[in-house]
Image (cartoon, rainbow, N blue to C red):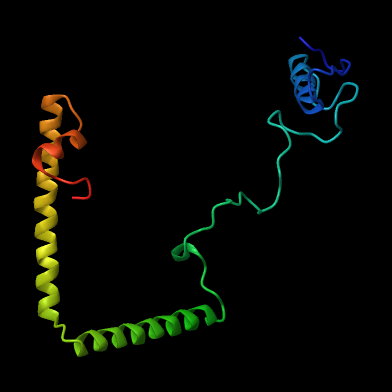
Length: 152
């Protein structure tokens, strides 16, 4: 065991050596800081503590919902203006599509049919996958057997 005031050992950094000296001084019943080369300021065995309210600063920026609001509100005004511009652009696009003969009902029907198609395709892929497992082959190897293309 290293005793208080022992010589510096190059294998151990000075901070760690101070901890050993402090522990040895406590074990001998001496006050901390006694012994040769020990720091004069009294510190706990946990090492020096940083004072102040700085705290930990994460390298990851906080999401916008957690950031404090700006005092001027200028950022909010810019966001509102950007949203108004987007709204105008979407209104123009809607007007253009309606001028080309598209209707909202047709669009909703088309979307519903796409959902149905995707559900049926997912079920087919699941069946092909189960069949491939049963046969001990890959799904890709089953495609030619059922006249399917990889892009399907």
